[in-house]
Structures are given as C-alpha cells and as structure tokens.
Image (cartoon, rainbow, N blue to C red; front, side, top):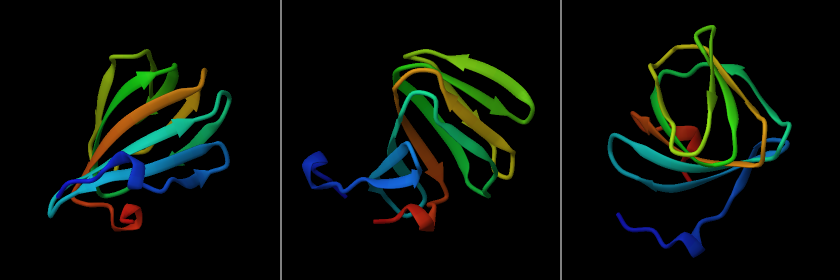
Length: 107
C-alpha cells in the first residue's frame, strides 16, 4: 500500500487532538497525531500494541502508572491492554504504529 500525504483526511480523536491514518496493512497501522498545547488524552487501553515516536513538541506520557516526559526523538512502546494517557505540554506531533490493526482507525 502507498498513500500520498496530501490525500489523507484528518479527524478528531478528542477535542484538541487530530489524527491521520497514514498507511495500514494486514497486521499493523500507522497514524500521525497532532496535539494542541494543554490537551489531555484520557486514560484508556486497547488490545493493540502501540509504538510511538515524538516528532515535535513535548508530551507527558503515563504508561501503567509510570510517567515519562518526552521530547522530539523520544520513542515508546505500550503493550496491549495497558492503561495509558498523555498531556501535551507543547503543541506536538507524534507518529504511532498499532499492531494488530485498530479497526476504529481505518479510513
């Protein structure tokens, strides 16, 4: 699969957070998240494993009750079914990969 970035529609995850599903295959899916400064992604879990990379900004991630302050170039992995949340300390952009595919994130 090949996707042109200009063809991807963004959508709201929660107020202040938008996402674009950039590409997906049979077993994984990649997304680009834009987080407005001050927004909080509520605590949640899902069965998919999640790996992320911060491109710009600053996030505070809480993964299974451990808090991490992330800056550009930092990355993380969250096993499936583990509670996690995030706060955008600054305007931020992150890329995240989910495996298996998150059906709710398919275009």
